[in-house]
Image (cartoon, rainbow over all chains, first blue to last red; front, side, top):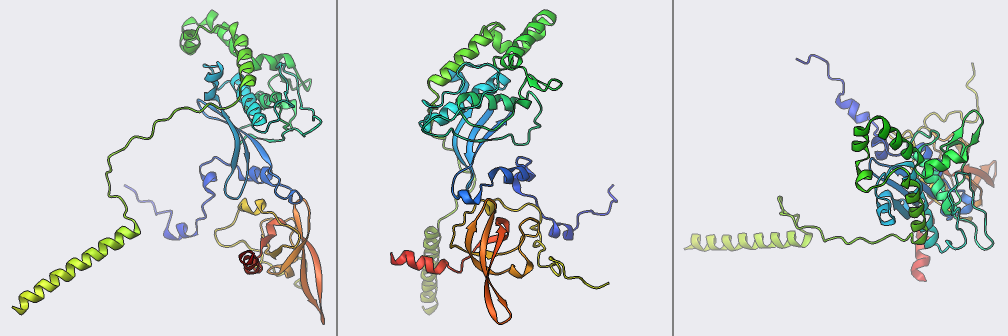
Length: 300
Length: 113
């Protein structure tokens, strides 16, 4: 039994102002977006690139995007689900995979802009803070990190992707405060710890503790690793190979897609303007013909 | 107590945002570019408090004479006494729209080329 007075009257709906669609969906922070997109007016049409990193439950999306009135234009994109081409098949959303995705995106962008010879970046991934130095001919490719709605805590995977892009050769203004391994007390980044995270050292440590303490949980949790016979000591080697493969050929691979299947139509197809006009003329002619016949019968 | 003639006096309705358009401003405002010599309309956006022109200039049209990092310099005509002065004001881009007063002439130029 509902005896509550109706709260939302017609007047309420008439005065209700909806938020922007992407705000209603909870996907875009417009306050941050305005500040990121705003380009100095005295730079006119110079594009301002954002390095966008987003995490889904099973994937990592890294893109270089510039904004325009028609919509955002993506210059290059890299996904974690492309990493199997480079030899990484498991753990596609961890810190090490984020590093690989950032690295892949950076090399891809530099290759399309033909800057990849000049800006090698940091080939050997130590955990230290690395910033690109400008070469003689062209200035490095500059982008701004766009984290979206993520809480930026120290050691977040977003900063793993950032490190990957930095080592790949992009110029992204940053500080090492939020990299994994930054010590709050001493206010310094410990490069050893960061290097461990980049090569999946934290995953390997967890594998070791699980193997000793709870072997059954180890079997279920790391079943894909076991299936591919990857053990905790081989992780670093695997990631080194993936980095090398990414630097060797970062171009995206086209996949073969079948044309979409034909489905049965359950509702009527909408007619075009010409079809509707033609139908009307037919109906009128039929009416006139029938009226003509009736007149003849009446006359007789 | 007397009414007072402060900078934003008598602007309660003039600077108010329209019905159901309050809150964040659309991003296309920030993506437009302006060159020197363009015609622009000055229309105040009450939710952006920086770089607001004086209420006199709301609804005026002028030409761009300067472009800075976040603002545009607009040259607007103002009648002072018995003469018209060309006044140069700086306005943030949120309070400026590209003017269509010149659009017809530009199209004619394009057609005749």
